[in-house]
Length: 149
Image (tube, rainbow, N blue to C red; front, side):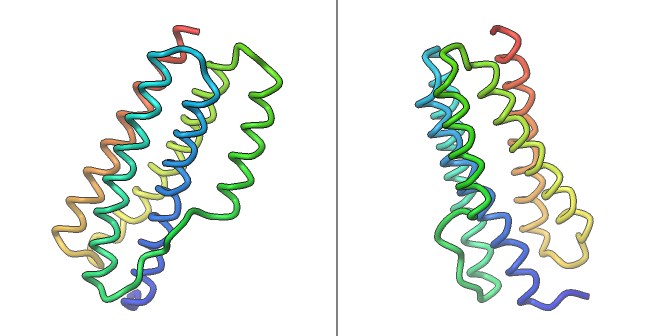
């Protein structure tokens, strides 16, 4: 069984991924010209900010201190994507694909956390399931938007 410290660590990893997603969506909004897509990315950044705040609450309830920023790997990935998209002016499809890849990683992380249901409070399980649902919906919406380009 995991210690409270390990649970906090797992939630901080998830929080880092949310911070990475927020910044990734902001970058994505700057890298596209299509207004519908730009609006979608901005709304997703806002949604991820809301999810991040909920994760922070859970970390504090466990007695932990939430991380304040995303991961170094996330910074590297965003820098690479910004570079790639700066070379191509019709990059909406590529930006959508990059966001889908990131969101799929998040869904896998939620699945791993939800497999450990006996470690979490009922409240946290509900939060994680909701976050996973929101993230999966973003993937579905991105797949639909991607087909327009």
